[in-house]
Image (tube, rainbow, N blue to C red; front, side, top):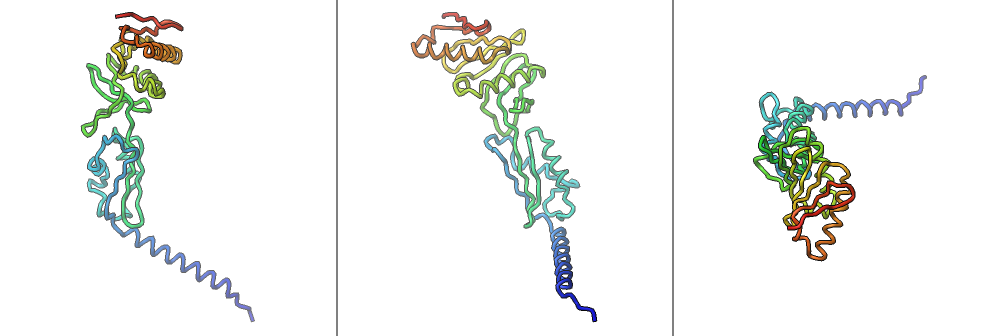
Length: 241
């Protein structure tokens, strides 16, 4: 007589039971409907977008995904819908086991606002143009002048450098582009015009500027100067009032 190996039989039975329960659970889960939408904003200091705006992007077959079966939800397409919005840097869309559709949104972060005769817009931390929002106005560095698309990269470099330095971040309140791709800065303290010139040797220029401010603020002579010219190599040329 053949000896029955009950261990193998029990193993096959258990495996079949697990497969049945998994399939049953999978089928039951997929016929469930999306009972609600939850929207979370990451780094939400700048509320350029509202929950209503995101809800309008979570559309499938011209209908909101709420109350649609989970099995028909195209998460990839929903992510693409949200990412297509000009205020969105990144987005993650997923379904939870309890029937929620969650959208985690990372909004773009502006670092400067361009105010030109042609148009006004933000430049974000990635160096891309970003439209203004009706929902929120960011308090960022202002940039004036005849700005064209080719200038955005230079402005991004300049503003990023200013924001990296605590002293400059507090003191510089605006940037103006003038002829020959030169730039002029305006400070919070005093009414001086800082002629930066072209965006070369920035480290040297800002080092000289900080040294000048430290000295003139210490001896309280800062208000005697109308312009601070940093264009020239390794020197600061000032004009008195």
